Length: 299
Ligand SMILES: C[S@@+](CC[C@H](N)C(=O)[O-])C[C@H]1O[C@@H](n2cnc3c(N)ncnc32)[C@H](O)[C@@H]1O
Image (cartoon, rainbow, N blue to C red; front, side):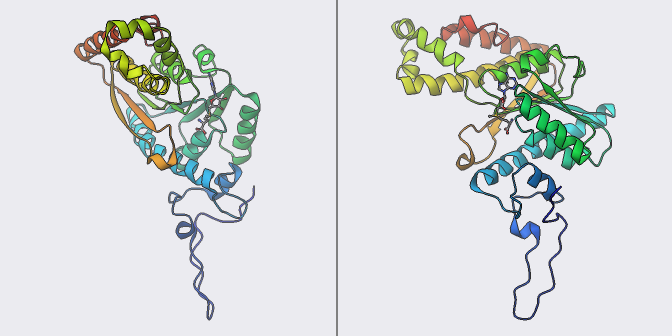
C-alpha cells in the first residue's frame, strides 16, 4: 500500500530560515480527523503525492459530508441491537463504503458493509482492495439493486440503506429494497430519473387541456426539471406511506454537485401519518396524470 503521507503526521520543527512544514490537516482541510490518507490514495482520491484535484476534492467533500449524516444512524442502530449492517446501492468504486468502514466500522469490531454494484470489474476491484486493507466485514455483490432484493448474500434485515447517485430508477429500487429488508434508515442522494418525465411528456397535451398546472412542465426543459422534482416528491411520499419520517436537505453547496438532494428517512411507524401520505401520493399521481407509475411508487 502506498502511504506517502500519514494521517497523524505532526508539524516538523522548523529548520533555520524555513517555514515549518504544514500538518496533513493543514494541507488538506477537507480531511476528517483520523481519516486514512493511505485509503484515500488507494481510492485515487488523493494522488501519490497526497494532493487532491478538482474532481476528487468535490468527491471527498461530498462523501465526507454524507458520512456525517450516516454515522449517527449507524451508532443508533448499533446501540439498539448490538450490531449494525449497511447496504450501499449503486456502489461504483465504493468510496462511501470504504470511507465509512475506515471511520466507523474499523474501530468497532462489529458491523457489516455491503456494496451492490452491477459492474463486475468494480466489484472485483473493491473485493481486492478490502482484502488488501484487511477490511474483513465488507462484502460486494455483483448484481442489480432489483436482483439484490432476493440475494441471500445480504441479510434479511438491514439497518441502513444508502444510494449515492445510483443511476436513474436504481434509487427507486433501493427504496424497494429498504422496505423489503425492513431498513431502519435510508439515506438517498438521487441521480436523474427519466421515467416520470417521459410519462409527463406522453400525456402533456391531455393534461394541458385539463388543467393550467400542465404549464409547469409544458416546455421540454421544464418537463425534465419538474419530472426530476416530482420524482423525489413521490419517493418521499412513498417512504412516508411506509412509516418513515423524511427529511429533505442539501448534500453540499451547489458548486459541488448538480445532483444535490439528500433524502433522509427514519422508520418511526405512525398509522395515521402513513394513511395520509398514501392518500396524498395517490392524489398527486392522479392530478399529474401519472397513474401508470402507481406500482413504481407503491401507491
Ligand atoms: C454515478 S455512479 C455512483 C457511484 C457511487 N455511488 C459514487 O457516488 O461514487 C452510479 C453507479 O451505479 C451503478 N448502477 C446503476 N444502476 C444500477 C443498478 N440498477 N443496480 C446496481 N448498480 C447500478 C453504476 O454501474 C454506477 O457504478
